[in-house]
Length: 251
Length: 222
Image: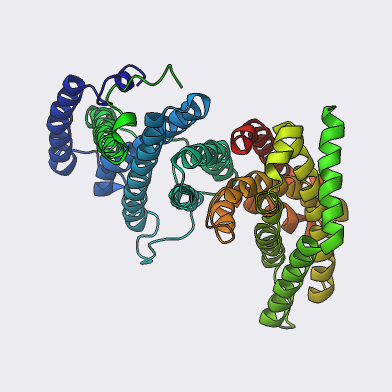
């Protein structure tokens, strides 16, 4: 990340185009294989196992976006480089988007496996509830940003909130769901990704899907960062416009 | 200035200002009392389960703290005393003093709210030691999160209603473990049965306190 932040535009174009091509090809393949490919037939899961190719990679992208956002927030606190604040903000936005998608795909999956025959869409499974709380935290991050006018203070306060929230996230995502009875894999007594819930044949679609969704998150993220970087440059007076880009060392 | 002396001086300053107006303490206690009365009216005379009782008590504590503890940093900015404090003390002293003061307020709130709660709902506590331990650990975590976030919110122009919005999602782990342990205490179970919840509370208080100490410098600096 640090190498690309030193160019005038905060993304390497050649890298961007390469990843874009790969993501288009692989995601198309994943969608085709995911909807029409062969999957092993298991009780209860049956056809819904296809959701593995979409739901789980979305959570991986959320985790990646969370870590990237916290990383750039920490850098912003240390050096005060404007682009770090933009990166933290846009990564948080990507985390919100992928978290929302992960919750929706998870709800659909839970509706047709855990709650089949009951008509229930949401029954406060710990993993679901904690994921919803995670989205609330990122919602609060954006509300806090909007409440502060001065860009310097806004970046710093938002970065502190972001890092502080990251400290509480392990409790939400790992500690509490493991203490409560849950139907979700990875909960009490049901490990995720053991031999029983990921057939070897599915790995050939699942692993490319993870990489492709991470790539998609990266593409959206870099484009958002580019956009906000240009906006910042247009809004700022000409003297402080971010044309030189190399600000990491001087601040 | 000696670090402990500085932190103690800030605590004493806040305490003296508070004793003059009693604004924060009165707001906290009246809010808690009002909420508890509403709960008592809404529930009526029939008994409720231990889980519901524990949940109601913790929700009253969390909401009262999120509304009543936001003042101390806002007052520094409104009274233009923040700059003076910045000149004379280090950030960590300010944080320690404010944390101590907020801890006192939360302890007062917890004592009064719990007493009134037990009086109104006619609750008897099965294992008082576990009950007190849970509330103490919960109060510590609640104070550390609230103190840092109230410092953040004091820098925002919106002020007031922002604090609960930021605070409540972050306090979910505290609420879940606190309610679990309190329920077991009300039912009279032993310490060992609430081990998971108590360890989570200890971890939450420790993690948030350490993070708050590390991050406060960046909030306080201009």
